[in-house]
Image (tube, rainbow, N blue to C red):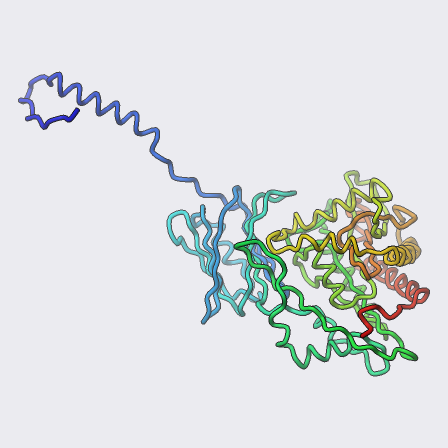
Length: 460
């Protein structure tokens, strides 16, 4: 029915029946329409913002109460990274992120934040160098809620061999890496375009570690062998590891111990050490293994501090890889806990080669595990001189970080950080020195009894 225009009623006259009916219809229509008008989506709340600058890469994390989408692109002249985040409005927390950019950040010069359009915030990172960014989200895990992660990797992948260039082996030492190191120094630009690992659509992987050239055959007869020891301080960055009652964090104390052990190793005439992380940043488990293999390590030592639900648990432990299941329920629980580091620290599954862990496990040999057990026993013999042992023998389980197929690998739980007495020891510089010295002596005992042979990669 079409309503016709009607002349206005005379002043003081009662409304006609038609006018009353039209007014009722209008009110009813309004009552029907109002409830279905869409409401504006509520912006997400930022719970925390964090930055983790390091030479290897810088991570920026926004922790939120809901999952958000983000798009990113890079610009040149000057270099910038632009990230648009849907479902956000400008807030004090975002302004706080601007203040968290450190002057010594290797990648970020400054950060600008603006409301690009309704419900979309734009972050503009002014960069010190070109980057290969990864932007991804993480589901709630452990103490974290939803996280939006921005990883800024250098466009040219850094080669871990650079970290050990400062200790030359000398002409009288058999060093399979010598010519590789010389080649890196002479031709650093040749590693600008490493092969890319598998990826999923829409995600960019971090630059892969360059594939090393095959070391030349060396005439090792009569020459001492240069040994490379990979030291792996557990956790880091977003992943603090276990935390003691007084607030001591596992990631901090194990890095201090690793640095002390590195200094002892580097002081030996025919040894050098390489740290899989040398600062407070997160390194995925498979990358730790990859780094050790990249530098042709002769031994891999992952350093941790244990925790348990009861504060009375105490003592040091040493673990090796197992292909047949864990040797105890505690070993299996410990492996599960340590293997969860990738979930807590935050791995971009879009750029992670899901076959890496399986291939490395399949390649693990009985010889590697047997050598690892020898190293572990040497460590236990020395550590028991300065601390009680939780187990008198080397435990075994499926630790992802021990799955280098050709490197003897052990994981050392230095003490229970959840035990107040042992936490106090771990905090002590003198006890950190004792732990480092005990492991140094264990390393020397192992290599004295088991001189390294020429490895397959050392022969052309």
